Image: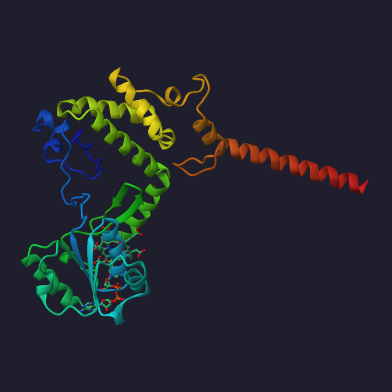
Amino acid sequence: MASRNPAPQCPMATNAASSSSSTSPPQAEKYPKICPGGGLLIAWQLKAKKVLIVGGGPVAAGRLVNVKDADAHLTVLCPRSGLCPEMAYRIDVENVVDVYLDRAYTDDSILDGFDMVLTAIDDLELSKSICYACRARRIPVNVADVPPECDFYFGSLIRNGPLQVMVSTGGQGPKIASQTRQKIQAAIPSNVGQAIVNVGKLRSMLRKKVPQTDMGARRMRWMIEVCDKWNLDEICTMTEGDMHKILEGWDQGRVLGYQEVKGGWSFLPSDVRIKKALFGSCPVVGYPSPYVTTMAGFLAGAAVTAAIGLARSATR
Ligand SMILES: C[C@@]1(CC(=O)O)c2cc3[nH]c(cc4nc(cc5[nH]c(cc(n2)[C@H]1CCC(=O)O)[C@@](C)(CC(=O)O)[C@@H]5CCC(=O)O)C(CC(=O)O)=C4CCC(=O)O)c(CCC(=O)O)c3CC(=O)O
Ligand SMILES: NC(=O)C1=CN([C@@H]2O[C@H](COP(=O)(O)OP(=O)(O)OC[C@H]3O[C@@H](n4cnc5c(N)ncnc54)[C@H](O)[C@@H]3O)[C@@H](O)[C@H]2O)C=CC1
């Protein structure tokens, strides 16, 4: 791992050590405050892991998307008569369900061998008993609608290529999770996924070029400099040929910038920046580029003036 995660900012955090300043040790301000009561947000690698969904309604269909996005091997257990249109489509047309069992849940032996179980059925007692059977087998389980019977909660998700963001409120305010997700989504540049794909490619090329483990720190410093020197739009334009050029800089201990790699005059702004200034919209607040609004305003003004002029000359 490169470097430690920055301490999460928690305005509601209280720290026993720092709240009584007279007794707090000097380290109290230096280390991140512990903020208990949260869940552990992790990117669980489900690829080829066996997941069972019990139920075939809209909630089960939502869970299906979550686990298939993570490349899980999925079994759905639900009588055909109970499948909602989306679930039927996923099973029959899209064919993304690896094993479909057209029957109701009857006995717990079916749970053996699964790595994760998700229930989304309208039978609370059965849901609870599935939960206990999973816990007896140490299988992580989520029971939709019954937070106490969940080993983990789902959250409000953003996905853009390799980028994934999850907002969780620990089960307390799912609608606020959804609203917060929408605000974050509006602040994330739409091309971030492509930029991450390109950076991922460059990183793996660098690892091939410099595989030595004792070069880890230098590799990381170099990659950090690439990401600082190339902005997101520029990274999106990086071709494999550009990557080879950038990697040539490694031997001289330097990182080539966009202009050095792509050519062009260094005293002019890059074509990417010009395009963005003229046609882009601000990814953070979403307003149209000032250049575009000014130009549109000018054209509208000119059109109105011309129309008035024409109308006047017609009435004379
Ligand atoms: C524990 C959890 C389930 C789990 O993970 O197993 C859970 C539980 C419950 N939700 C309930 C209600 C609503 N859920 C939503 C929406 C979402 N709920 C989601 C997740 C979670 N919901 C998990 C915790 C997430 C967290 O930490 O915040 C989201 C984020 C993701 C997803 O479902 O995939 C998705 C938003 C997706 C998006 O838009 O991005 C809305 C709003 C709406 O529909 O617009 C309402 C109505 C408003 C309200 O009730 O507040 C009730 C019924 C309460 C009752 O009966 O009164 C319970 C049960 C209970 O609380 O007891
Ligand atoms: N985010 C959340 O946590 C939410 C949870 N819910 C809850 O999730 C549950 C499922 O809701 P919906 O998807 O709307 O489904 P639903 O209530 O429309 O249908 C239930 C599904 O479970 C299946 N089912 C019932 N008994 C079964 C059995 N023994 N074996 C296999 N399948 C069985 C039915 O055939 C059907 O497909 C409900 O309890 C609902 O209250 C609902 C909305 C949001």
